[in-house]
Image 1 (tube, rainbow, N blue to C red):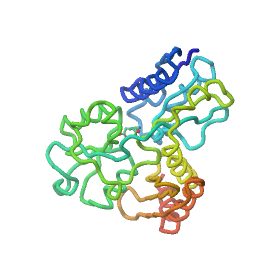
Image 2 (image 1 turned 60 degrees about the vertical axis):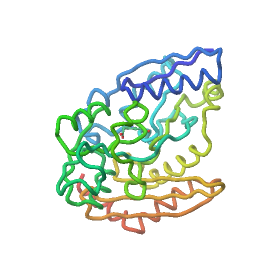
Image 3 (image 1 turned 90 degrees about the vertical axis):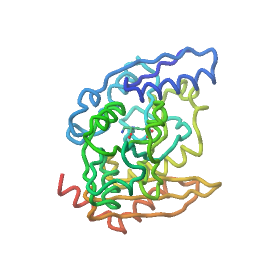
Image 4 (image 1 turned 120 degrees about the horizontal axis):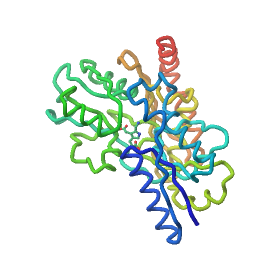
Length: 307
Ligand SMILES: NCc1[nH]cc(CCC(=O)O)c1CC(=O)O
């Protein structure tokens, strides 16, 4: 029994692949699990704006090629970065238990978002984070920053901005929790669809691999992420949209909050509702409809006109 995991080489991607490897070894002690470390087009072009070269899909194309070639059996991803529709021939398998879903502020000089001085510079390249920051603190000035978590922290340490927004899960996984100044309540900064969850992709029809990795699935997380991805899909599935969505499961009840806003803070739409845990996609679609009714249709038109 041998499984090969295709992974990017960023410290976060490696942590996640090693985590899946360790979980597989705990499940199947006789198994041999290897990592195939690849460099993706997205990694090679970390300085270009994401939308300019085709979006986040380019971070996983090389991993999928390795699956097709049979050089690897599975690929491990942050669910936040997995497009809602996979190319033909691939399937999304288990989704592991979600870690801290929240965004985090890293700020050497302030203690809370509200305590940041007027006009403070905040580093983020995410339209979603920008739209929500602008809705709450229109005075802040947004500075685009891309690259791995370490690169972004370095830019902060160089003094390019006063605060940085990153996913708490990424910082925690990298042992950088001590750098977090404030974990933002989802009411203040709603996370991205899939944030904090790690998922496994394999070749469609590879039942052997599917069977081996199936025990890693965390049903509650998978249900929530299904609802969140349905929201994204119903709004066009573009993962660079200023869209946030977070589902939570309580018994049979699935609840969800969604947000879409203009990155300049000039308009936003919100929705909140409940549905059945047995129909997560239906809740995600209801959330998309709710957002549209609250102004997201006009926001989507304005975004399209500006791009
Ligand atoms: N887009 C990059 C990315 N993809 C997943 C994470 C963090 C881990 C996660 O959300 O699971 C990050 C870094 C960040 O946004 O700070």
